[in-house]
Image (cartoon, rainbow, N blue to C red):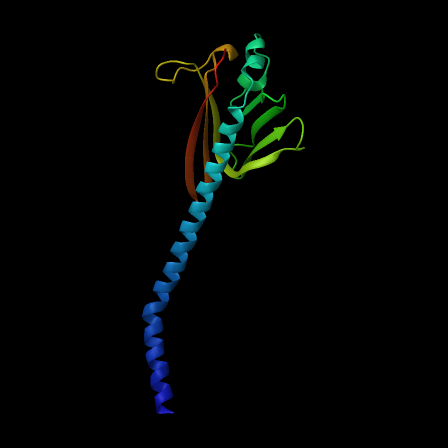
Length: 172
């Protein structure tokens, strides 16, 4: 019986010193894992938006001389026609609310808006000309040469930011 009491006492002492360290290790793993998942969601959404915009049919943009297409109109919405004739719309809803969503929708094929990213707290779409530095804002649809997407996803109180730029294909 004495041996059992000694084993319990030693176990209690070891648990007192090792227990908090194990709890901190699990907590750190959880934080890192959530951060990696948030960054993966951010990267996926940005890469998907850039991939879609690179398929834009520039002829339909250039033919719209009156800037009536939503490609140029709004800061959180962009619509364009791909080479295959499908209209694509990328939109942010309720941003900068704490749990906003970036969606993508197509005029044919997949119906309804598909979520690209959730937990978005900031989202903007920039349109730029073909200047040397690439930082001159486009003033009309006809001079858009690049589109940038900037997004912030917040998860667990930590903000993860990213941006991507799509240089549009030849205008000729």
